[in-house]
View (cartoon, rainbow, N blue to C red):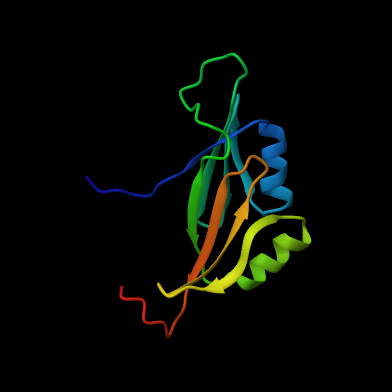
Length: 127
């Protein structure tokens, strides 16, 4: 087996609102939408969004805000400034970590966490 990529699935309360947030605030593009399920992309990465159905069954039902994705980038400071101007909520601003990455964490409307990180060229990360 040869793996290709992984796509996190985030639970959202309102798919339309989530799609607008990912597009207008985080700069993602809508890739597809099928019923209460949609895909968004930013560059080479993809995320899927699954709307919870009140009183209904869904194979993707997890608690809202329980999703986490780590997105590797070539830089994070410029992107952080862009999304903050558009109203993004973040857990912390870009900072260097001893494991060799500069990163920040954004939070979507439902509490899902998206960490954006880039390698620090001269860091001794132990990797």
